[in-house]
Amino acid sequence: MQNTILGLDIFHATSFNELLLRFAINSSVILIIVRLLYYPIAKRKDYLFSFTLVSTLVFLLCFLLESVELQLGFAFGMFAIFGILRFRTNQIPIKEMTYLFVLIGISVINALAGDSFSLVELLFTNLVIIIIVYGLEKLWLQERECSQIIIYDKLEMIVPDKREELIQDLRIKTGLDIYRVEISRINYMTQRVRIVIYYRDDKAPEGE
Image (cartoon, rainbow, N blue to C red; front, side, top):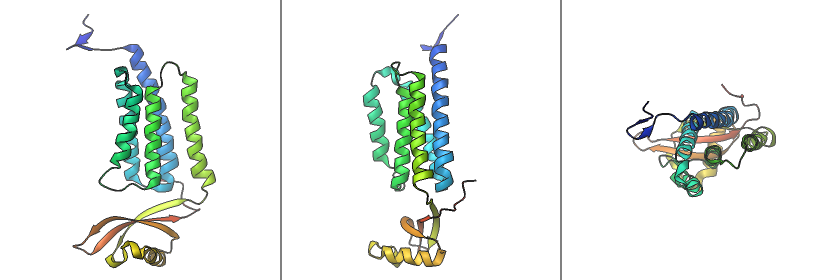
């Protein structure tokens, strides 16, 4: 019976089972961190989408290229690529960048943890990361950081020198405890700007 097609092996039961197990572990951890810990607070579906796909892609890349014997260099290369990239279409806030770094790290660990690591050690490592993220988001940082995208029509207020005045004006208009803003997109044709506002709300809903 032919075991190859055009030089490619059809099936390796051992490696395929390992892929399924590692993928199940990685996907479960990513789901917990992104959907259960990050999203209920940030409410950003765009980052939910990006985090999930990036972490999954990194895991599969690392796992499938593990046999190239470039594990350490490849792992650091993945960190460097996504750290420098910063999704050039938009500036990512520092918190989202931290989440991205954590998710890439988890995916690399789950894909490249060698035979010297037992399954218990791998599960323990993932559990520790989940506990730390949970502790920071749910216990230590009791005041919830929420964000919304609003359309603002005073272009003269978006210059850096008037940042505090902008925040104060937005506080008055929205009634929210805004402490940080980010200029997302400026439309000079309509004289409007898209702003991401960040505010504290310890009674924010847990999620949809």
